[in-house]
Length: 359
Image 1 (cartoon, rainbow, N blue to C red):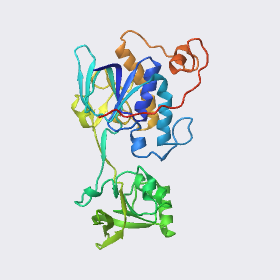
Image 2: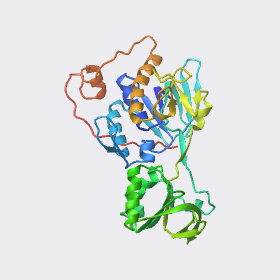
Image 3: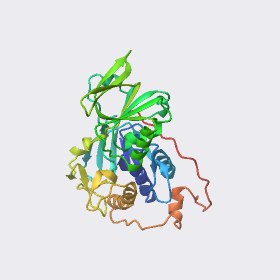
């Protein structure tokens, strides 16, 4: 059994920054996430997509944001348990919490902070019998290695940001590209749609309005994608790789069974403390809801500060955590590792490498 001050469920950007805010108040944290790496949606959905609304960082990619957060929390030595799903949460008679994971770990925590983003999510898949054997080889629901598509004939299905972003990112790498969407109306950013249309006009890619109705294979690899167009005719598109970006199925997963108050599949919290309906269980980021809630990383970062003070109050009733500033507080500077006990400056270290524990 692992005993700790807090358990954070979710290793996305908000979960990582929660480690920082807890650490400033002297609370340790264990971080659990179902995927085998930190980053949440930032690394799962848009690792290379630019983010422009992080304070004092004019632009960074999702991957860069996660790397910087990992470096920032290093002084607090959080313990990561990646590739684990929290399957049960039980409030004990002494007010602490017992958590169990799919990998057999058991935690005894003073407080629990849920930073699960959209919750458990999975891509909307292509419902064709011939699709399943191709997944991960010539049919993909995310891009992990862009170089895999160099010189290939590819079809991209979808009309949202992910589909358009990857079409624009890969168009210079592939031999041919056809974007397939059910209509000529797109959910993606207008600038991306305009750029795609320009590329089509220049003959550098094609757009096909219609629905994918079949796949043809050769030697167990993709050969053609069959698309029923708006006219009702079926067009056969030569393709060696198919990328499908039809969005995600968000779901709370096991969290829905923990007896926490819900509103439209989101955890209801007190906006002043981020506490859920169960004392000692908090929720930050996209997974929570309250009046005026905005689903922005920036807002999630703000929530972690309030949550840290509330978690400290829960862990240490009557022991008020005074507000201190990292610029002037020797205690905070020692916790951050920028000054030693004698008050001397400490050289910053490179960001840590995160390893997944076995699930």
